[in-house]
Each structure stands twice: as C-alpha cells, then as structure tokens.
Amino acid sequence: MRCFFGINLNNYSELLGKITLPKDPEMSKAKEYHITLIFYSDLSDSLVKTFKEKLKGFSFPKFKLEGDKIVAFPNKNKPELYALGFRDKSNLDELYKRIKDITGLESNDKFNPHITLLRREKLSPDFKKSKEEYSNIESINLKIDSFGLYKSEPDRGMNSYTPLFMVKLSLFPIP
Image: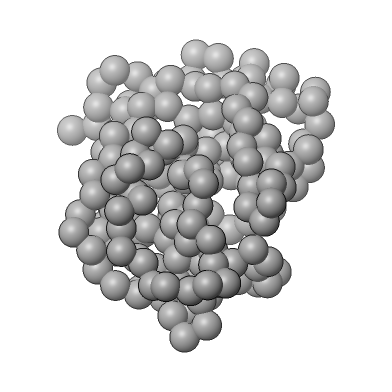
C-alpha cells in the first residue's frame, strides 16, 4: 500500500486556507494539510507492524515551524503545485533522519518538506525535481507535537489519508 510518515496539520486548515494563492482553474486546493517526511510507494502490512514496534518509545522533542514563503514546483512559470515553504527546516531534517535510521528503509523520494496548498490533478513524474520561490508571506507558526504513518489513497483527483498509527513527540521542546 502507498504510505508515508507525515505530520498532520488539519488543525491549521483555517489558517492555511486563508493564504492568498494564484487563481488557476486547472488546480485544486488541498483537502487535507500535512508535511510528508518519508514516502513509500509500496509497504506491506507486516512492515507497518514492524515500523510501529520499532517506533515504540521513540523520543524527539516537540518543535515549532515557521512557514514564510510560497514555493512553486517545478517553477513559477509552469507550476504544477504551490506549497508553503519553511524558514528553518533543521528540526524536520533531524526528525526525517531519525525515522529513516530507525525504520531502515530508504524513501522513494528526495526529502523536500513543504505543505501542499494548491495542485494540478495530474502531476508530471519529475515535478519535484526542482522548486522556485513564488512569493514571501507573513509568517505562519506551526507547533509540531506528533507524526504518524498514513495510508494514501486516490480520491477524486486528490488523495485521502488514513492514519495507521501515531507517535507523540516529547513534552520538552527544543530551545
């Protein structure tokens, strides 16, 4: 099954939905907001159970993210996807590395954290090979306190996400 480790941001739907984006009749707004940490095109049920076991007792501090720009994939002249980019993604980089080390599996994709805001229904296979800053925005602060493994299924041109298990981050934030 198609799965990803990700951070659910649906509790920020109202805030993220207010971001001013270009008008494009061929694009749709995201229905669910998240950050993909690691994507797997095909995971077995037994690997899902193994990952859940390996991540019991996982320790990583809660942290904050600051979204401060809109980026276009692959570029702003021929965009296929608009996303929120981050000022400092060092905590995401470290979380990604820790999960990858614990699970022992490489991702099918290069790590390029963002929050999809607007996208075309059909994306070209190499749309994520590059990105270009589209515009700066007033900063949006996000508090990250958990991540999970999600099943990803097509749903009328977009994807729907079902949590398979969640991992809470520790109470002590990174200073």
